[in-house]
Image (cartoon, rainbow, N blue to C red):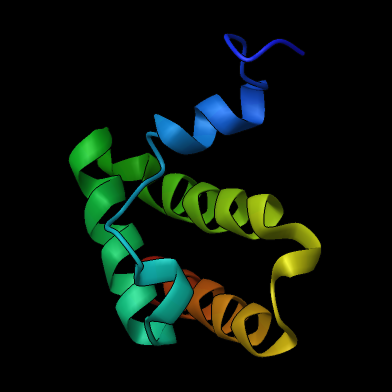
Length: 90
């Protein structure tokens, strides 16, 4: 690829609607991450799709990190997913 073309994944990371705040996914606790993705998802659309949008944010980050995601951070993200599910499932 030439320098003037980015891969779609680089563009998605640079201009991502899933972004919830700098560094939250990389260093936040499970509760902090869950609270941030829920808050961001609530701002984006109808209330009945908040859980789906919040989970999409978590999954997007997890997929983008891929093999570079440590087992410890992966466990934090999985815990954040559980918090999102338990908070929004009623």
